[in-house]
Image 1 (spheres, rainbow, N blue to C red):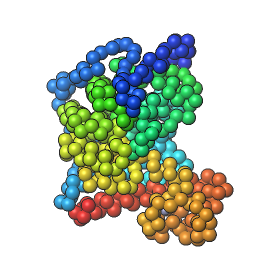
Image 2: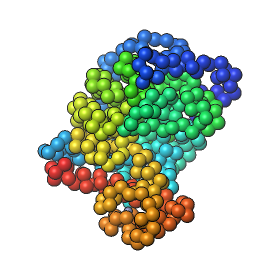
Image 3: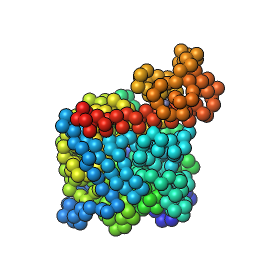
Image 4: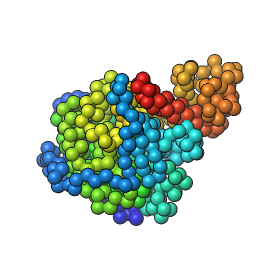
Length: 445
Ligand SMILES: [Zn+2]
């Protein structure tokens, strides 16, 4: 049950109020950009405590239910075509991963993904823990059954949302590539109550009740959800913090990920776990993180944390990290979905990417198109343009409707505008990934 996974403290408001939030977020150094905290509550440990050595883990054993098949390595670049085999079917790579935060694409049914040739869908443990609760999903028979989706799923640890919804954001004034979500909660910075070696204690953005997320409870929740690929708990420091604090954070993430992996290995449940490489844009820390996590028996690797302020920083970092990660396991770049960055990452050998970008921008009227570029359907020039966004696109919008009709639906605030635009952008991403795979097979990418 969820209650056994995450300690629910809804009735301990008095205890919660007694915590000193300002102390929790005391500044770590004199660098004005750095507002990220160090641990302020027990248990205290030396922040540079090494994570457990690989020799304390069992050796990696290939799984019969999860594997990565390398189909072709480009002779032109490091790009590769592959296939990830999961209990719920294959994932063709390079592949884009649509985000269904609450177990649903906003404004579009799951079937759109199949039609758009997108194999893997991302769901967020944090949101599902709070609503309807991981225990309810487990009672339903797991997330695949609950959602009615017999295709591959990946869940995150919940940590990203805890830190991005609640943490002090030192990157406010930085044009960071991977913008974190702004909290809609009035008391945004107060959502995280405590971060220490055990885990993170936070307030629900829904009702203010207090939860504790630890490496062990995150994995237990992801076992209840039952996605094909799961993610260990890590810490998400903001962009722009000082190197010393970043180093402490990387060490803590390694310790948390090692605990997560140990918990996962006790009961695999036909799931694969990806380690998450951290280190921001610090080359030394990225190398340290990729090297350490590669030594552990993870099934694949995600590249997380702050990925840089632009595509150039992302590419520079990723080039070094992917050289270290093992070729025979899949990799995933967390939170990247703009076409320019995806194409750059693919040529470096990246396999999968997830982002809310195509679906979120669709709901804001932004369409990705091959011939017109990125367009905003709210522009009045589309009021009388009776042409589809793309003549070749097989989506419902382009097959049956015009830009003028979509412009009208958007102006009239008809929900179908979101549905049609979302379906189109997902088709664009699916089409782009298919073309990239074909280009790699011809050694043109
Ligand atoms: Zn279309």
